[in-house]
Image 1 (cartoon, protein in one colour):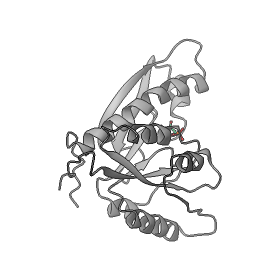
Image 2 (cartoon, rainbow, N blue to C red):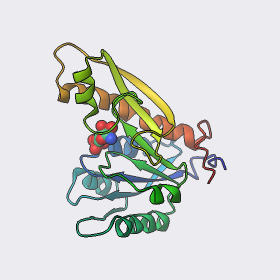
Image 3 (cartoon, helix red, strand yellow):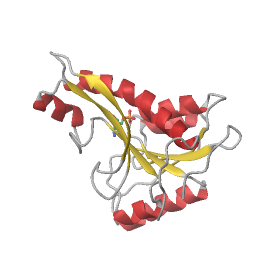
Length: 205
Ligand code: GRF
């Protein structure tokens, strides 16, 4: 099954999962404000209370929810998130700085419909601290990747990438900030292309 093709009056409904600052969420919210956008953030879900990303949702009058996982099984936590996303008719789940591994069971509930943004040119530097890994490896080019989430860690099909130079004297925060500028451009662009039917998520179960 292909994603349906959206018009501005019938936008692709996104559920954005966050854990922190939410600058990528902000980029999506800003894009949704464009008349020409084919995207709508239907709900924001955080696994951490009190994070800046939740303020950003509120500032844009977007529904949000917090599901904490302390003292709960993974299944119970993911069951709540799944029910919430269904209740908001979410079509594509976006991981935007969501710092929790999802089980294969949860991923199977949204086949091909979970998209992540990762701060490196995958398959290089998967996992955490990707900018730190790039600096340690001494590469002169890194970047960011938007990809489908599968049951591995940052192993799903790559949808798009943007490159970022590494300069002498870079430290992790400087490099991370340069990568994020590209993330904020690439993630909304890829999702718009999905909504327009130009990128096929291939959602066969
Ligand atoms: C981004 O750099 C993204 O690549 C990674 O987590 C970071 C989240 O940043 N997965 P923010 O919360 O969107 O500001």
